[in-house]
Image (tube, rainbow, N blue to C red; front, side, top):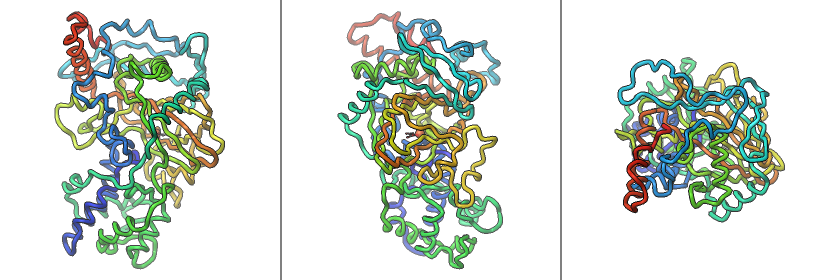
Amino acid sequence: MSDPGESPGGPARGVLQRSTMGGRSYFVFVLVFFHMCIMNGIAQLYENHNNGGEDPDPRSHQGAPDSLQQPPLGPKKPPLGPKKPPLGPKKPPLGPKKPPLRPQKPALGPREPETVREFFLPRIDGVKVGHVQKLSLVPDKVHEMRTLSLKPLLFEIPGFLSDAECGVVMQLAQLKGLVESQLMVQEGQEELAEELDLSPDEIFSLLDISQDGQLQLSEILTHSRVREGIWLTPESLREIYAGIHADKDHNGLLSLEEFRQLSSDAFQRFLLQRGVESSQLVRNSHHTWLEQGPGAHPVLQSVKQRVVHLTQLPDPLVDLSEPLQVVRYQQGGHYHAHHDSGPVYPETACTHTRPAANASSPFETSCRYITVLFYLNSVEGGGETAFPVADNGTYEEVSLIQNDVDLLDTRRNCERSNLRVKPTRGTALFWYNYLSDGKGWVGEQDQYSLHGGCVVTRGTKWVANKWINIDPDYQRQVRYQQLVSQSAQDHKDQEGLVSSQDMHDAHQDL
Ligand SMILES: O=C(O)CCC(=O)C(=O)O
Ligand SMILES: [Fe+2]
């Protein structure tokens, strides 16, 4: 499954308003349950945890960081590269296994219609779990980067940030102000639901994975762990069943007959009236965003530059990514397991390249190719980052919840995760949310990159996320960068600052 932390359930208020009686009510129920079940399997898969209603930050709702949404595109962003030196020489050595920045061009398969790829994303070789590579990220210091898993490709770099830098980032975040990371009621999925045209029997059949004519709790939860932003557990689902008299024969299962009789009014009313504590949400934290471009605090700029070196990506890709997200969990805080970015489908639009998209798409995700997670403090108790299925032999969605044990539940089952990283101040984790497509670009989502923040049992936990946004659609990424560069250029030209040669040189990196 993809990120459970985003608007999977959908439009409680809208549905309540619309639900009347009889056939209409039934139809609405179908929509509601479709939300619960199918939209989580589809729409949610398309989006990432910060799109949709959980995140009150406007840049999350609308997709892109403020600086990327404002036309013209680039005032806050540095120009894309007219003056940049070639990519290779300025990168620090990463040890013997460093992949070439411009490997031999692989066969491209079906010929691409517009431009041939001229750029190949570097991808660091993990070699094997436990492998250590030396990095020179800053002068006079050698960092060690240890491979923690190959699925996902995940590394740990102790001391990536100094104690003082961690302090500055936390202070800047506090100065800016943190907001709750999750809104209760998710908006914006109603129209999507109305486009759906499935009968209750069809929905039932889709949910009934084992095809035994009964819906088990795990079959419901596999498709929808989240309702109204609330993390559903087997217990809470039983409570809902009891509250709306769904399970008439009290056998813990929903038959088709029981399923057909469910009323959406009752279901919605139960959830909304029950009242919710923050511990029952998908995510229980506060966060803010810090820009890292020119004019930002030197520490933030320096961290960004270090990320460029770490990832070996060209500056523009990092510059045009989301700002730094700083997150604070208070005692009792958590973040259930999720993917930072959604899977790739032809219809998927990336938030950051939306200005360069040809057509509007109903599905949007942040397209976070890489996550760099910084621990800004060492946590007194709990708060580990869990990777439930890291290096698992297989990834099976249905195996994530078995016998009432939900591996994605970081409040209860973190200790069952394949990998847990204890927060240590200054350490950075770094992983790829996507595989390579084998042709030097972004491939499939790496399902093994599921991760979450375990409940903080003592003290406060501070982390920061640097997400590197890259569009799996190479052409769209190129178009977007050209657009940004052109926009920045237009600005400069108006001010008489640059020559046409500079314009010509733009985007040589991509
Ligand atoms: O808090 C953690 O350890 C993980 C945070 C995370 O996954 C996120 O913010 O996306
Ligand atoms: Fe995450």
